[in-house]
Length: 230
Image (cartoon, rainbow, N blue to C red):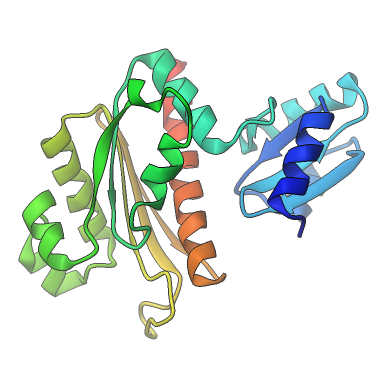
């Protein structure tokens, strides 16, 4: 896997690049009838580079919403532009990612226009005190559960009053059990009245799992924002 600096240099040099996420190389090959001149994989997804505009356009149409950028932008840049275009505010609630999501959001210059802030609720106590997650929910289902993630989203929306929000709770590792393995993560996103909670089981290292959690979260919000624009 190529280093991030090398990837950034290649992206600057190559005008015809599609950035994909949540798709495998096998799926890409099955969907395309054109061959990229170069393929690069990273935690951020798959970059396809084309030598000509025609092949680039055909691939973009074929891959549809798996394409999150055709301008060499990061996921947080893409989401930031969509939030600005729709004049929406974002807030975040993080457990296992412990602020990584917020850090990525504010890596983008001008993020203060759409990012209100967030909370890191690593402990169950703070989940209850700051987001009004019910003790019964934590006792019955555990901190890493769809039910807790949903209540984190609801508490976030009530506390910050933002039109968009993201909540993440999971087991980044090491650890886990038979019913809740290492890498299990619930990723919740809301946009106005639309709510989506995604269950994932990541199989990378602790910090790679944390990064993938934020990438899935931003990508799911991106999809809701695109639907909002239609």
